[in-house]
Amino acid sequence: MKKGLFVLVIAVALGLTAAFAVCRFAHRASPEDWFRQKFELSEQQARQAAALHQEYQISCTEMCARIAQADARLAKAIQASNGMTPEIRAAIAETDAVRTECRANMLEYFYKIAAALPPAKKQSYLDMVLPTVLEPGEMSGTHRQ
Amino acid sequence: MKDNLNDLLRSWQPEVPEPSDFRRNVWQRIERSRPTKEVGWLAEFFGLLARPRLAFATVALAIVVGGVVGREVSVANQTSAYLRSVNPYAQLR
Image (cartoon, rainbow over all chains, first blue to last red; front, side, top):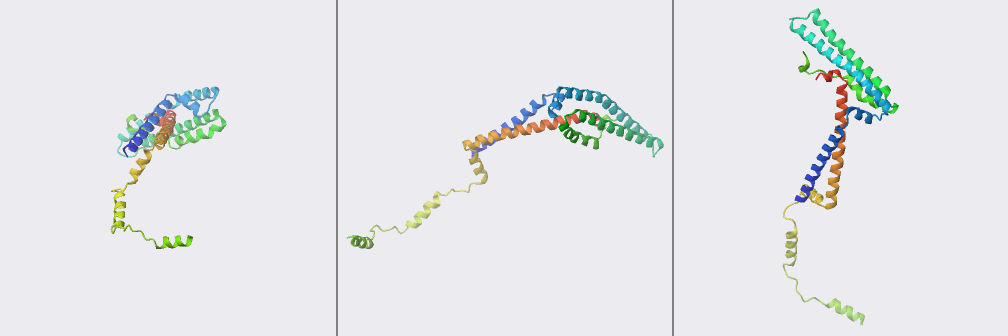
């Protein structure tokens, strides 16, 4: 019985080690390399996708800042009032408008990337990213200013 | 001659008397040879694992499963990192 238990412990230990090693080894690849391997891109397709990604990153960062600013304006308007005001309504509408624009930009970027992928990989890419447009999530409180 | 032999065999009675407690002794020996306690399924399982071939197969299977799980976790992490990188909401977190 002790021998069997020893075998089980060794098997579990080696299994965990293998999982950790594979995970670490796979993480050594850069995001670009990972993307290229996952969607089997050629050199040209990878360059095109990287260029689109860099271009989008600029607008993504801008969007991120605009969302934070709109939220901050809304928070300030709410704190400065004891009831609903036209300013608060406008601030709420602005946060919604910025988020809508952000989601539209995201979707536009996803379609551009999908167009740059091999035809067989387009759908799997869209399946992977479209939930992000449907449920982009929310910011944590620490970033609201 | 053959008939005589058959008659002789039919009439032969073994002279060694069977001990009166013969049957009881047999059953006592059977009882003694039984394990004192029931072996549980866990003990049976560990007993199986102690066999060299099964031990080797178990370790090999654990390594393969570990590798597959590690790969899946890595893919999930990298997918999640990509989605965070393209989502302004997530970037603010």
